[in-house]
Image 1 (tube, rainbow, N blue to C red):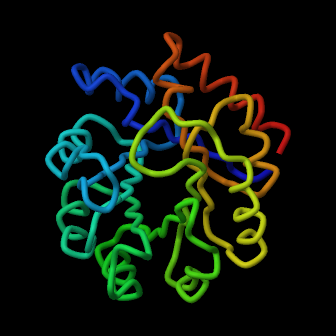
Image 2: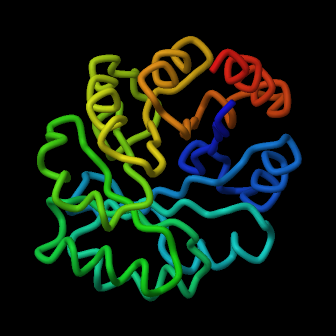
Amino acid sequence: MKKIMIAPSLLSADFSRLAEEVRDVEKAGCDALHIDVMDGHFVPNLTIGSLVVSAIRKITKLPLDVHLMIDAPSRYIAEFRKAGADWITIHVEAEKDVRGALQMVRASGAKAGISLRPKTSVEMILPYLPELDLVLVMSVEPGFGGQSFMPDMMEKVKMLRPKFQGLISVDGGIGAGNASQALAAGADILVAGSAVFGKADRAKAIQEFREIFKKF
């Protein structure tokens, strides 16, 4: 049985009590924390920066999966790695020297990832697969939480799975009702926002995912 991971997305957490939220999902049994960094240019929203990642790093031992939805992410790779990012994911459209940026991530000691937006084809990232530890398939348009899952994006997971030996993560609208679709396609990591943080009992929410994982 392969290891399947659940990574709650902090975009859905209560930021007025962020430390408590992080500790709560860690105690509930999640495998990693997904952190969306948005600059208001590459995607139409602003979120957190490296200072918040650094603060989170101090209160948890969980792997921090930092998703850079920003222009020219190579400018900030060292900064986010220093802040405590374990996985750093960029977008192929956001960087002039994609291979160089991925090599920079790996040289820093972090795992390197590329994200596929709904309109980004799998073919665009095929040249970079040897430099990748993770591919993040977006099942919503990036920028905001709470959107509906786009099931047709699982075709990208199916296309990638035989070509890529690393981790495939699915992010966007994930819940107990559609987790099986992502896993059947070949996903290793489910990024869940409101499906975890939106529930009063996070341990129960994560256990519901674990029960689904047993089938795969």
